[in-house]
Length: 230
Image (cartoon, rainbow, N blue to C red; front, side, top):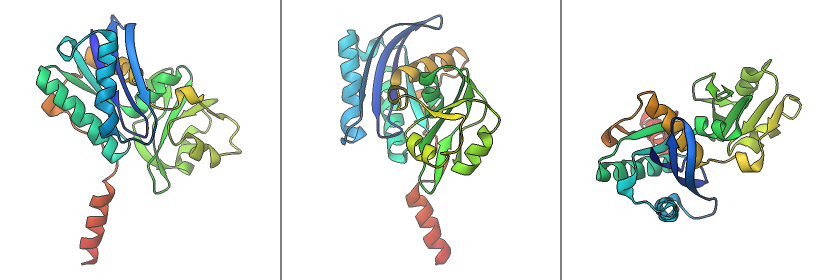
């Protein structure tokens, strides 16, 4: 199965083309950029380059996978809209992948806790062990995450909120940072998670794909606050 995968849920933009059959990863092309350009400038060219280097075209893709959230509201929307448009044009199925699950997949075995900076002193997070989900995706304060991890043994922290979170739990001896190479998003992991979702019956039509927000966008929160004061 040829899978096209994207992730633009945080600062990093990443795209991959991957051959996955019977759960085993074959060949792939992976492009990742972490710079000051916007995802609207980088995401589609990354995927086009991956296809070009792998020698395939959009019509060859069997499945589109995207990290549909949580994360930056703008980034989540761009990723979901890009996959939605590509899959609709090519009349191909797509799958929605948790950005947190894909990051945990990059780290590997043991307890893994991705943390994404959700602002307002919160992090998007979930706990995984040996690639299996332990908790649902949620937005939590650092103290609540530390309580969730208590008694779990050694835990690896990844995600764009890694350093900020670790600075808030300096005396917690069983919490360790993931390597820089395994901290940010990786579209290859999105493809692998997407394959698992497809095998489990999670494929959907492009028009069913929706961004996943754990919190209301700031503009919407501010609108409600203004109306409440009015």
